[in-house]
Image (cartoon, rainbow, N blue to C red; front, side):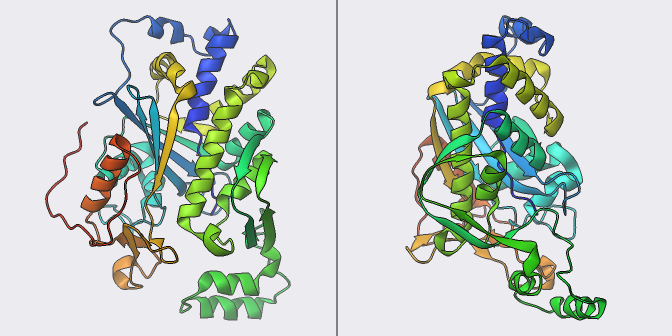
Length: 376
C-alpha cells in the first residue's frame, strides 16, 4: 500500500498561477479566458459550497495500484472563504459496494471516480460535485518541482517499520520452505503486520522526522504522510490524516509565495499534474475554478477526521473496529459505532463540521434510522 497526500489545492492554484503569470497560458487552457467572461457559466455548488473528492493511489507497479489509500472530502465555502477537509479512513466498510472486501478504498478501483463520489456521498451525506485522483509518483515529482515544502512538525515521528520502496517482495534470505511455512501460518494469524515486520526485516526501515520546521522533498513528504506504524499517538489514523493536511497547507503556502512565480517551474508542474491526475473537472470547469479560486489565497483551512477516537485522552470517535468474521471477509475493517452501514451519525458530524466547524463527538452514540437526502 502506498500512502499519498492528494493536492487538489495545488491543482486549483496551478491554474491560477498559469493565467496570472504567463500571458500564453491560453495554449494550455484554451477555453479558460472565454469561460471567465461567460456570463451563463457557473461552477457547480449547493448553497454557496462546492465539494471536491480528493483521492490518492499508489499507481504504477505497487500493490493494489488503484486502491485509494487517501480519501479526503474538501468542502469549499465560497461565501465564508473556508475550506473544510474531512478525512475518511480507507478501511471503512460500505455494505453497498459490489465486491468481496467492501472497504471504501475499493470504490475507485472497481468504478473509478463516479462510484467513488457516489460512495462518499452515501457515507457523508454531502453532494460531491467534482473528483480528482493523484498517483504516488505524481505527488513526489510535484513537490520536488516546487523545491520542496516547509512543514512545521509538532510531534517527533519515529516509525521503525516503514516500508522500503522496491523491497516489497524481498525474501530477506529465507528459503522457499521457510516462506511456504510462513505463508501457511499467516492465514490464521491475528497480527499479520507484526509477523511481517519480524519475518521480513529487510523490507522496512526506521523513519525519523524531528520536531520543528522541516523542508521536505517529495520523497520525505510522502514518507511523513504515509507512515502507518509510528510510535505512540503518531501511529493513529487521526495523526496520519493531520500530517496529510499539514502537507496540503504547506503546498498552498509555497504556491502563493512570490518566490515560486517562475515560468520554468510552472511549466514543469503543469506537465506533472496533467500526466498524474484523473479528474472529472472539464477544461471549462478549470477555468471557472480559476476565476472563483482567487479568493482561496487567504482561505481559512479547517480539518476533521473520521476515526476510532483516542482512548488515552478519552476523545470519543465515530467508528469501531469490526469483528473478525465472515461478514467482513475476515479482514480488519472499520464500521460506524452505531452499526454497520448506518452512516447517520457520521453525516450529522460532517454537516456540522462544514457549516460550523470545531464540532465534538458525544460519548453516547446517537442512533438514527431515518433516510438521509443528498442534494445532487
